[in-house]
Amino acid sequence: MRYLLRRLVWMAAALLGVSVLIFLLVRLLPGTIIDILAGTEGQLSREQRLQILHSFGLDRPLPVQYVLWAWNLLHGNLGWSFRTSQPVAPLLVSRLPVTVELALLSAACVTLLGLPLGIVASVTRSVRLKGFVQVVGLLGLSIPNFWIALALIILASYAFRWGPALIYVPPWQDPWVNAQQMFLPVLSLALGLAAVVLRMTRSSMLEVLGQEYVKVARAKGLAGQTVLVRHALRNALIPIVTVLGLQTGFLLGGVVINEQIFGLPGLGWTLLNGVYQRDYPVVQGAVMLFAATFVMINLLVDLAYTYLDPRIRFQ
Amino acid sequence: MIRAGQGVQALRGRIARPGAGRRTEGPFGLARRSPVAAVGAGVIAIVVLLALAADLITPHGPVAQIASPLLRPGHGFIAGTDELGRDELSRLIFGARVSLYVGVLAVSIALAGGASTGIVAGFYGGWLDNALMRAMDILFSLPAIVLAIAITSILGPSLTNAMIAIGIVYAPTFARIARGPTLAVMNLAYIEAARAIGAPNWTIILRHVLPNVSAPLLVQTTVSLSTAILTEAALSFLGVGTQPPTASWGLMLNAARQYMLIDPWIAILPGVAIALTVLGFNLLGDGLRDLLDPRIPTM
Image (cartoon, rainbow over all chains, first blue to last red; front, side):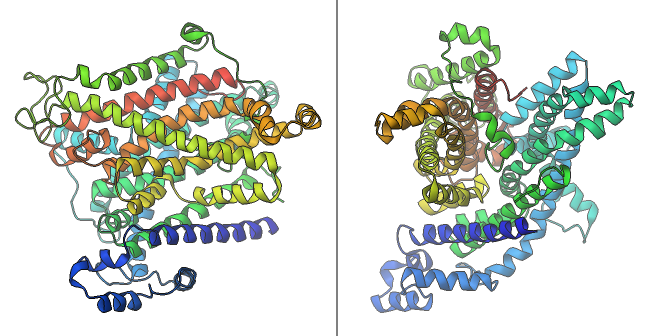
C-alpha cells in the first residue's frame, strides 16, 4: 500500500516533468506562436501583434505561463485548437476509444500469438519447428510494422480483392464493419510484437525448465502439462510480463503509425495531424495523454509482479 | 526492440560482469566463435560498402528523373522506377547512406550523452545520481516514437532533427545500462586502491570504470543501431523525418502509399532494404550478447 502510494506520487512527478518538458519545447519554437497563428506576419501592425499575444496570455513571463497552463491542465482544460478554436480536451477524449480499441486488440493478439508459440518452441524436439520459430522471431524484430501494414493492404487488395470501409465506424454502431476495419491494423501491429514476446517466452521458459524444481516435479510423476504450466510457466512469466510491459511503448508508437496508415481517427492520428498543421495545443495535449497512459501501464506491469510472484514485495 | 533497463530489475544485475570485454581475434575468430554475429557483420559490411560506393555503383543519381514513372522491375531498370520516374535501385542504394548516417550519428549522440550520464550518476551517487536518473525517467515516460515525433515537430522536420530526436530518445537506455555496472564496481577494492594512491576521479572513471561498462554498452549500441534505423524510417514515413527529394527508405515507403496498388514493387523493395539492414544489426547484437555475457540466453 505504501509502495503503491509512493509510486503514484512518483508517477505524478514524472508527468509533471513531462509537462514542463513539453511546455518548454513548444515555447522554444523558432519564431513566435503568433507567426504560426496568424501566418500573415507582415500584414499585422505592432499593436495588433501585441493584442494577439495578450489575448493568448503570451506576453507574461514564462513561469507564469507554465503555471497557468498546468493549472488549466489539472482542471481538464487543455486549451483551444489553433486551427478550429475548439477545446482540445473533448476532442482528444472523443478520439480515445479508437486508440484504446486498437491497442487492446493488438495486445490481446500479441499475447495469444506469442505466448503459446514460445512455449511450444521451448519444449519441442522438432528441429524444423525450432528453426522456424527462431527465424520468425528475428524477422519480427527486424521488419518495420508499417511495412507489414502496407504489405497486408497490397495482399488484401491483390489476392483477395478486399479492402475495408474507408470511413471509421465505431464498434457500437456496426460491430461487423468495425471488426473488418480493425483486422489489418491489429494484425500488422501484432505480428512484429508477437515475435518479440515469442523470443522472450522461449528463452525464459528454457531457463526455468533447466531448474531443479522442474526436474523434481517431473520425477515425482506429475503430468507433463501440469509441470509446464504450474511449475515452469508461472516462474517464466515475470520476464515475459516485463517484456510485454516494455513493448507497450512500441505498441503505442505502432498505434500512432497504423492509425495514420489506415485512416483511423484515434489519438495518434490526431497527434500527427496536429504536428502537420502546427496545432501545438493539440500536440501538447495528445503527448500528455500518451505519457499518462504509458506511465499508468508501467505501474500496472510492476504491480503484476507481486501477483505473479508473491516473493516480490516492494518497499 | 527491447528497451533494456526500463524497470527491468531482473536483468540489471546480470549485465554487470567485470572483465567481460574480451577481444576477438579478427573477423575469422568472430566467425568461429559466433557464426550468428559473423553473418550479421557480413550483412552490415555489404550495406556499408554499398552506401559508401553509392556514387560509383549506382547507374543513375538518386534524384534524376530518367524514365517514365512506375515501371516494373526489368525494362532496363533492375528495380523499376518510382512515381516520379527516378531509378528505384539508385534510390535504394542512396537510401542506405541516409539510414546508416542517421543511425550511427543518432546512436553516437545517445551513447555519448547517455553513457556519460549513467557513469557520472553511478560514480558520484547521492543527489546527483538521483537528479540525473529521475531526469532520464522523465524521458522514459513517453513512448519512443511519440517523443521523437514531439521533438521533430518542434525542431522542424529534417534529417538532422530526426537524428537529434532519436539520439535524445535512446539516451536514457544507455544511462541505465551504464549506471548498473558502475554501481557494481564502485564497491570493489581496486577502486578504493586507486583512490588511495590519489588517482583523480576522471582517471578512475576512464581506466577502471569504463572497461567494466563497455561490454553491455557495446551490445546495446548494436541493438540501438537497429532500432534507430527503424525509428528513422518510421519518422520519415510519417513525414516528420528526412524530407524529399532525399532518398530515404522510410520516405520512399511514404510516397509509395499512394501508388502501391498500381505498382506494389515501390512499396515492397524499400521495406526489404530496411528489414535486411536491421536484421544484420540484430544478428550481430544477438551474437555479441552470447559472446560477452553467456548468462543472458538469447535465441
